[in-house]
Image (cartoon, rainbow, N blue to C red; front, side, top):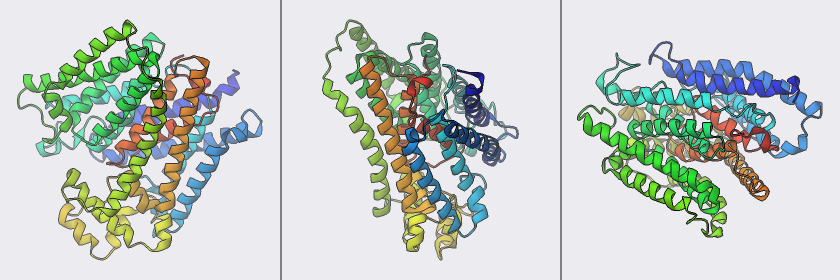
Length: 500
């Protein structure tokens, strides 16, 4: 590889470091206006990197180093998605606000276009070196250590917060939903390192995974549980179909059990010190010392696995992996249908039942054209308060706060970008997972192990989709999702093997 050909990869690596390591850790003013500060940093980074990516992509296609037809699917789906976003913004009541996004969130037109370009860059350019994820995971581990300390009253970053605010602000991400969303993608990436053939990568993955899972048990967002369950199911199916994946999977379970037991022990050792949400389901389960059972079962299975006892598992399990991934995507769609057709109790899911009801009612009041294209990226909050009677309804529960999202990614997208926006997103994800499964099959035919980047991308995308059924796009994790999504469309997967 020539120095010139390395330039796109180096720029992509720098983008990943800035956006996924520095911005999540940045807290120049503490928790004061933390969300808007991180949004501003991302938009500035996107303003620098997006033009560079576009120039390099155009150059790669023009000079023939990259064949346009190899990326026809991704390019077509990206153009369709981008066109829908542009039309959605054009139809919005405030194009300028739709472009930049609402204060504190900034998931407007520019942010989404920048992320789509980064997905193209991740698909086309080579990620140099085998340690591309380590800075990201080091930053995630640092934030998780701070978050775990927060939960036991050690205010490393927030000594000025009142007791009632300590449940909502955690780590260096601030909002608990932002932190949980970050874990929903970084935990799968850490788990994927266990499947690397590089011992140093395995060690780094094991240590980071323990720290991140400990923070996950303590942080208190129950929406993270379905995402982690999905990751475990996918890896279980993979281990059942491939004996080479059995030991890493069992190691992951051992680390999960150890993290759960460590949290349960900490609560017992420091009675009354835990200040997280009282309805923390993950910690409640850990409190029954299920972690000890998981550790014991994992150790026993590792013993039998070493003797080759699991080598003859049914090969029919190979068919389960595409089935599981397909069901995961369909699950998002099914929940969206439930949200639109079923009225849940107001208090369901920390008042998500109320938010979904308001969003559903708002969508039904849209003109047909807006049902197709939405009210504009990040314009849901402005639209809802413009509907007669909705301002009073929202105020009755949230006071003067705006509902800027529906605490459900697809439901939010439905209002912001319409039916066509949701369809574009789901199609983009479905083709990415299909592409990833094809790449897995190709590696199996060669008799080689799955590259770490491929597992990281597959697990990260599926975990993000599941978690976001109960949460929302955010600048600290959604850009990472689009990079992983783009990597699944890579036409030359061997170039980006993380564990090599």
